[in-house]
Image (tube, protein in one colour):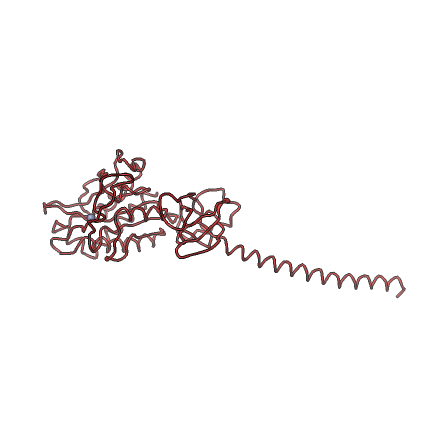
Length: 335
Ligand SMILES: [Zn+2]
């Protein structure tokens, strides 16, 4: 081997040592970078539903909404405290309830999501994970303290009334409404909806205004309020829907969509149960409707003062029909 070759080999050796160090260094940098990337990734969260409200402070009130985000919006999580997550979105810093965020990627509303990770739909396409708030009417004890009947209204109404009672079965309305609502929640979740309930127990104190504000704060797409009717005439039977009318002083703009919601649910409910359809009625006196900021309806499932309706509504197999009827109506609304 000539001197030239020695030199050449030395250069090669030197080069390969240098290369090993260089590669090692690059790997180290890559490792550090990927750790950094992972920690950035963990800070990324996505809105799990549509119309998710970002607020200037960690609490629900009308004055602190700073942005309304579509489903699948990517945000940077800054911190968490209780039910609230501090996030950054489009240069704004604010707060979103933790149950409206997901760490996984969610299917987005809009098509311009190419910069976001591939959408992974966790729900059947038919329901698209729509957000439903169910309000089981009434509670263990009525509350006669007053609250405004609508935003800015000087008309004051009881926070929540005691409801009616089965004249044949003796079952109070607040028990029937929760029993149906719990089954409805399970059925809707099975169908892929995101479901919230204003109450899951009887002994609560939640006014009708507060029930509406709860739904507003969730960014719920619809509010379905479950009630049963009462009449001094025990011969009256059947189901009806109450919705805001086109003349509602607070949410007239939501009258058409609420009409559609009321009619979808009532039609499917009566088809499933065979109960008489008493129609969709405009009603602008309901505090729990007037404070809502999304399509809202009250389903009066039947008359607890009618022996036949009352007995049927306490029958387990009939309840299953009631529940699937309401769920079918919600499916039809979103279709
Ligand atoms: Zn009621």
